[in-house]
Length: 105
Ligand SMILES: [Zn+2]
Image (cartoon, rainbow, N blue to C red; front, side, top):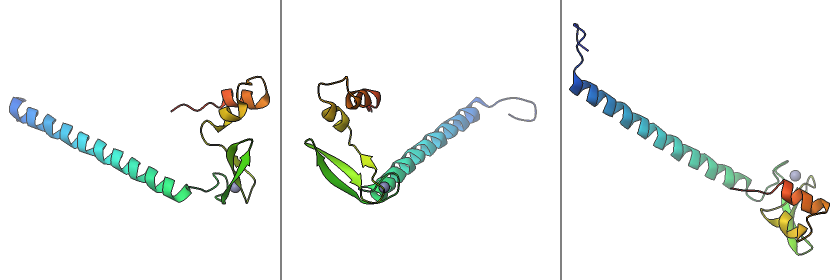
């Protein structure tokens, strides 16, 4: 806009284009940073207890390999393991847990 209040359509077009390019670049950088942070978190916590950071030891329970923390005793089930343990019986405690905590991505 000049001193008389006139808007230069060409200047406005380039200004808008510039804003859109900057916004797209910022969104790309945000997405890259989020992916990098997720990868770092995963590398740091892989194989560690989510509660105390202790070592997880796999133990077989009814054919399902369950991770148990050697330090605090927490039990970690991989996606689908609760359902596997419940089997066809949805009426028991395990079946109820499996349906209550069913994990969807
Ligand atoms: Zn633990």
